[in-house]
Image: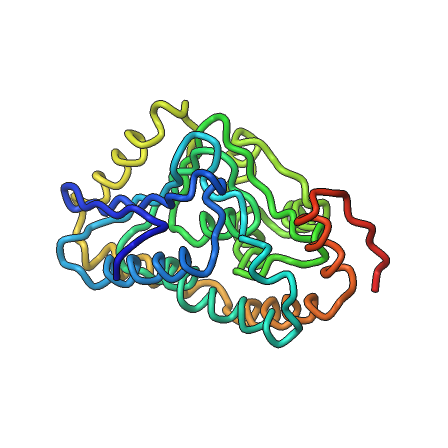
Length: 258
């Protein structure tokens, strides 16, 4: 596959993947998700890849969310399919990749962007990073595993607070909550990420892969199915239509709880 939305470079057994839509704050659209699915499949199968470093282009955003204009008119069935396909092809594929995948969060990680980072096995954030799941402001809930992975990482209380308020947190707060492994100056982000992947690279690769698999098995996947169904149902609400339209029109939404 020829990539138009991501950059991919292999250096010393580390696959550097950069979401390259800086003019859109690296927002996830269908084509970007398809390219991520392809590059993660390659990483998992390739003997020359020992780890993946995933980041966003520029200094403002890791991924500022999903491209809402692509699904603003979806109905319930389409919304459920959107979540199911995205989870299977990208987010679950990253989580289940036998090679360690590290998210170098270089700025905003919001909505689908934070869900992408949480699907990775480890996260390092720059000091300027802001993280959040603002889907409720659009009349939605997180649909790419956010309700499940955030709860696993920060606990039920923090997850409910973050998701139901939709507010962003700072990188320092994220580290305190256990959402990211480390916070570093932006100028040191890639080097610190490389250092961690290089340390893992020196370990037995098959054992690393098995360890990732065993750790993932400690979580019950049933919750993802619940999330997919709930995400799809949001698309049949007037609040979602209003939220998406308000976003596109750059105004505050007026929700009616219908």
